[in-house]
Length: 518
Image (cartoon, rainbow, N blue to C red; front, side, top):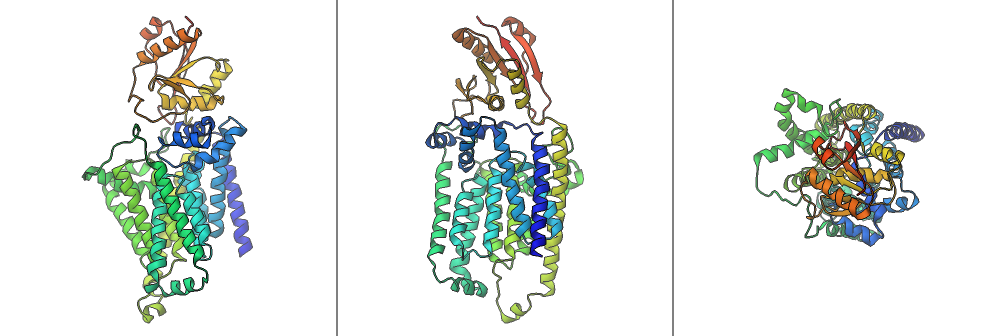
């Protein structure tokens, strides 16, 4: 059976990588993907990188992984390759070791979050998913390998703010299990007693604490940060309901089969689903808590992670499906570790009735629930991959290719809006800079500080290009993600070159104009 499991894991991983590689080759990266690449590419040192990361809102493990790759090549395609490989390792470990049946594992591999959001869209979240999977693999023999558990959770805390919240929940649950679990969990007592040297356990807890503290220190924003600065501590019923609805978005991620599929949800287009959405979310959380009830470690991890993430989404940043996906993976992680978590036993009678009718019903209910959820994920994965093949995700790549084909990559450039135009800069591949009028400075990646104005008029963009043209005494290329008026083109003697519009990310279409030399 072990050989069959291994071969099945290898086969599914190979199939996943083939499908993923083919889809990734059709994926044009957007600004958030390219931003990480530009930070790694154009930071002069590790210290310089972490100074820039202060404005990003995430710890820097993903950027550290990209930094050596950016010294090998200036093409961001290598980042896509690394990202897909990391998710491939996650898929192998899940299929090889997770306590789910073969059908559930198949659905997992080709689910929306795994196949698309954390494999094709190259962000830091895939690294977090891999480390969560490794933690689950280690969980069975955690007290024999607690230093490794500590190392994994230390790294997990440095992948994203959402993974940091999950790390805190896991760390707290493990602390409660180790220090207080012996009173109620007799099997745990025997397991801990079997470990003669307790020093590795203390080292493991110290590593978890170090990971959490250092990640929090990294996330402390500078005083001039300009992105997501608001906090929402006042109770707002509408906002609270919107946050609760994220459970259904994470557990049932089925995008609409349209060009702007990304971030959409097919189910919310039906009035019946809208009516039952909030009760359904509470039901999903309640049912999950009931399923984990007899295993306090799994239950604590689930409750603290879920409420921690929902609280973050409420008070700080609502986020998108890539962030909300952690809600589902917390559920799946707890289903995995549930098998090896110690059981609460209050009496001998209860110990003898571990296979009681109630337990069997709960097991069947859990299996059915996981299967149904994974079927929805697989449907979402199929829709996302098909839409990715059918539509251009971002026109940043094609715009850069056009600029190179016309021999204009050496011209001074002005770009607005800056966050969108940074995608073009990343695909130009040269370690070059572009002038961003919105922040009145040249650069490649975006610095999310207060120097950036909320918006800027098109006339000011043209004036900035005119000033740059006079300074450089040469033509200037204007990259705009909106069209200029015929009046403005005539007034400044601009030449319209080309436009790329109609991408999945609606504001990553571009219009190119050439301002002649003075």
